[in-house]
Length: 347
Image (cartoon, rainbow, N blue to C red):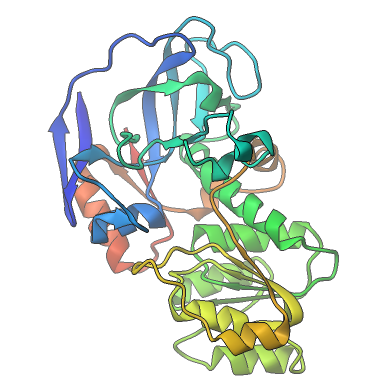
């Protein structure tokens, strides 16, 4: 079978690999149907690492994915505790916590120090035709959710967790820096939570326009002074909650500058150089609450409910490509060609 393996920075090769063996107890064999390209995948593609985690040998990447159950191992219960059946379409949570450590026991599996992660070294990800996954990571999805939207349940889960950390209240003002898929979903969730007004900032004009379509006042940071326009819009007060969902470079300082005195900022983006840079006096004198968001905590049931009722995840998908065009898709995404939002690799 075919798989897209990362051999080094900017070196993805679509190769023949061995077909997985039969699934063991608690596992299933999944026929992968769709994989989304995420910002963290781009970091691995460009830098050969994500944060301080480097890959030391070729590996299959891709952690936003869904597929069809082909074979079920003994005792295979899904993430809701129900038996999985052959033929079911499932979205897969890529994070596998140990469930026994202090963090897991306290209800923070996203912080488990003993976890494995599909698409995070050394565990292969989903850009392959078939793979073995843990049944408990699988969440059945209805026919009303497309394959592409099924991959975006992971993106939505990350956004839900970030909004949870923001502790939004009705009529809180919210600013979002970075209007990629996560930023746009944060805007939608903030709106659903009753936050108002909404402000958004990005460098790409079509993303700014998408934010406006969602009801935000939005600006291109290359065309305006972002802090000046926010201060004007809020009469100098700043926003109650600011979400940084960009590349965590100068956008972190921008977030601190935009947050009101005593406000809250949530950092979702991952910096390419693995460093957090912010003027200390800004955060100290404002008494900011600063939260760093890591992945999600059992958000798939909530994400599925939202995707079947009020959110149109397909609207975030800008491109579909086959597995054989994975390299071109990554290059297109790193250049942020016009109209790029979410690229789905269809298998």
